[in-house]
Amino acid sequence: MLYAMDDSLGATTWGAGRLPPEAEARFVAGVEYCGRFLMGQSEAQAALYRLTALLESEGFPYAVIGAFALNEYGHRRVTVDVDILMRDADLQEFKRRHLGKGYAEREPGTGKLLDTEHGVNVDVLSAGRFPGDDKPKPIAFQDPAVEALRGERFALLPMPRYIELKLASGMVAPHRAKDLVDVQELIRSAGLPCELARELHPWVRDKFDEVWRLAQTPDPF
Image 1 (cartoon, rainbow, N blue to C red):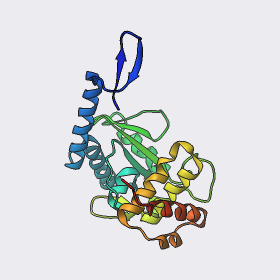
Image 2: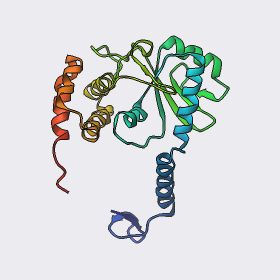
Image 3: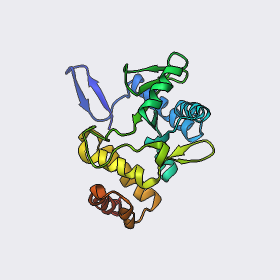
Image 4: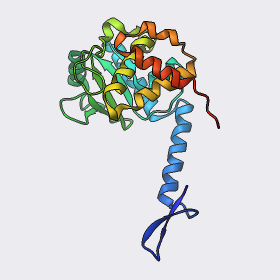
């Protein structure tokens, strides 16, 4: 529903009204970005390809996680940033080599980086830390040198390991509830069976069962 300012009352009123030009511009920009993404031409995709090419050429173990990984596992979703899993020592060496040469730190001393060529945020999650609230739990970010599956151009985690991270994050961090929705949408889009729970860490199996049941609920509209 649109909203407009009622000048006589000096307050916002709901109902039919004129869409502000700046709101319309944001809408158009968002639609155009989605179009570029679906055509494989978005800034985030360019940043992903650039980063993974560097990591591959320099021999850094890594795994693509986040929304880009969802696309590989079977759920199509547009994203505006890049999420990568690395070992902390490798992250520090990557920063030593590349900060000021196409990458910058958004927050000094962290894995929150910026691809300055494409204007895209890059978040590097360190192996051994914990998803969601970063507090100790039975599930931690895996070592990509051990767990990642490598292709010709990209490396990703096995789907069960990725789902474990998503579930663990959403279970403990209210601000990460979208991680549970991502798993639900992946279950629905990829037709994942309930038996997949057997391949997951026991700590998240009940949550997977719960989310799997939710994914079976038909949309009445």
